[in-house]
Length: 314
Image (cartoon, rainbow, N blue to C red; front, top):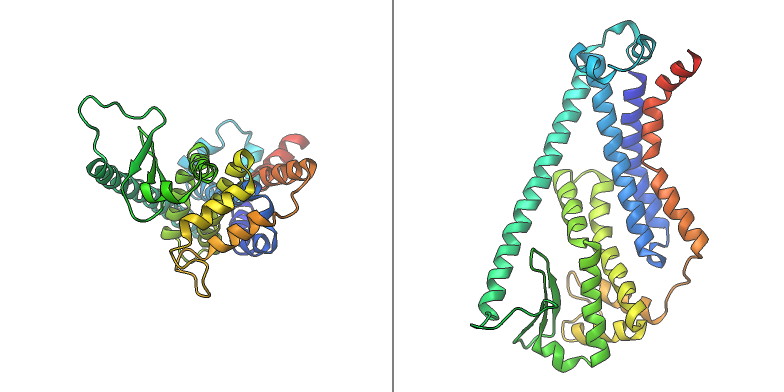
């Protein structure tokens, strides 16, 4: 039970402590690195629970034990299952974690179904507002212009992705700012941020009281916007992206004393673009990326260290 319990404890501690540690870091400096670290932390938590479930089931039931330790010597089995018999705690732990895994899969499936339904509705609404005329071919770059009094632009993913921009945005934004907006939305599409948002929403919706999943959802929504801002800035300049954000949001009450709900990050994004933070050196950036990649390795080492020690001694 020592190894499954250690993995369970490690997963619980990571789920509670990691969000607090990441909240203290200046993640705005490198949103892409921050996204990578967050994904590694969540993967480590899920891996801890998955390995704990597998080893607990191996302790509790001979059929599972035979499959998990089939290629291993009998000494390895004795290390993981002292005496060869598991107590009731092993079966209870395995069943509880398995139920959590099934619930996670159900939440992911629900999120995918909702996303597809929402996408179908949005594409139907887009086709109604901007129908393709007979003999007219779809734009090669997927750009769709809609009549609208509100300046806006968004990316519509799918088998035939579309980049939608309203006529009000075309009138308000200059050529450079419009190019920056389009590059921002294309940055979302290239990085497949929609899938990352779906996964974070599914985990937070399924386990709302687990701190790491709730913080993951909240931070991902913010970090993907910062990452897309940086992607557009590299092509068109930080000032152009900042001016485009101001042009699209100045009529929405974003820059007042009480920003609109869900738009309070826009002033911070504009301020970040106008006064960019000191970026990490390539060496430090590579080091943080490598450190994040090693986070999921820790539960694997804890799980297999006893068996590796027996094999080494043998």
